[in-house]
Length: 244
Image (tube, rainbow, N blue to C red; front, side, top):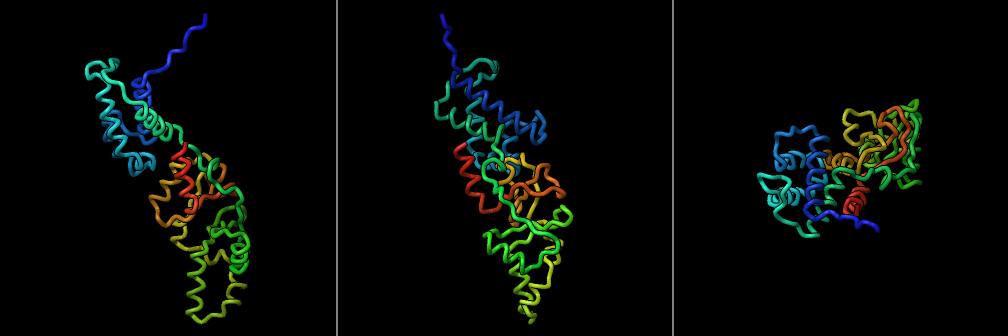
């Protein structure tokens, strides 16, 4: 005779989701066990895009957890949450504990790069031909910077104001000479292939100047890129999280 498989109650599922969120956030961000769950959520709002999106729900679910579990006996359940509440809480817990990676879900893997001898004219032609607005520039297989279309337009505009011959400038100027600015790194960053969508969204949230994230195997500057994520992918990343 086959034994019936015992399914978890809603309260059991809810507590498992709660513990998963609590453990994951404390482990990822190094918060002490002494701070409360509510404080944990509030402190991770600036650090985690999922927590930021569901902050109010997570706080409310924390209060609900205290109503479900008896104060003097954590193993004694005094209430059962509704199915919809448990489903939503489990979804949030999954996004926090095991978020999808950006490389597998939304990353553009057809990366176009150029070398240190590429001229500004050549880069503009590459952008026009491919439709890509951000071209990483490498020298001896080491990332030197990124040719960003909006920044190139600014440079060309200044040269026009100065009265320079644009055709000559574009043909004789190396793109490497244009992108080597002190603030250039504000517009891009490098990450490894295990970067989560949540982390990618948070990078764009923290730095509003960020135009792209270059993905390499280990997240170092001396590797060729295997993927690129730009601000145009933000909507797709949010859609992936919504349907995860």
